[in-house]
Image (cartoon, rainbow, N blue to C red; front, side, top):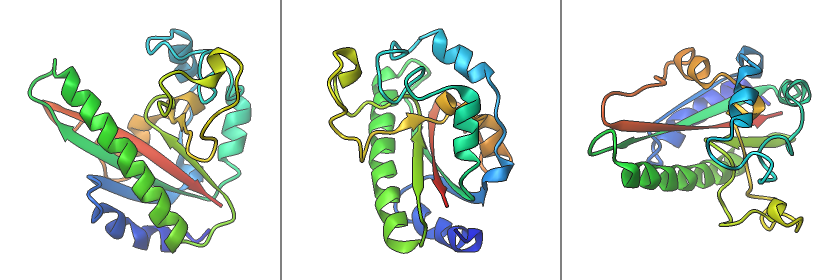
Amino acid sequence: MNIDDAKNLVDEIKNMGISAAAAFAVADIKFDDIFRKLCKDNLCGRYGKNYKCPPQIGEPEDLKNEVLGYETAVLIQTIYPLEDSYDFEGMGEGGRIHRENIDKAREYIKANLKFEKMLVLGAGGCELCEKCGAADGSPCRFPDRAISSVEGYCMNVADMTNSHGLKYINGENTVSYVAVFLLA
């Protein structure tokens, strides 16, 4: 996967209504196992209950090796305005728009870049289904669209954004969501 081609695509991706985007070498990604501990703390309630969350996605070292099997990363960011820091409805709406942005970017990348394989990681665990099949042992209903979280893969999102011309925190009364497309 040619990183220059991915960098040329960034402006087009931003023109689709995505707040910010960057392309960079996968080798630049920083990992930290502390993010797995945060998943185990289960603040979101998905740990062990979602196919695309830990522990189902694998061990941190295996995930790091999987990521390093890709060459190029395309990071997208959705920045959504909030009425105030307690605007949970706005946060939910921003998350919904971000999932739409992931789908748009995925289709655009598929149509405009040449690559052998792609892994898409998003903000938080997969939320495609109200109840994940992992809860009762039934298979994933959307294996071609389901995505794991960037943090579940132990990637340092703050470093990834700040190191590539984006901001991890985008000001008062905003929420920022990221997704990363790994390409080989």
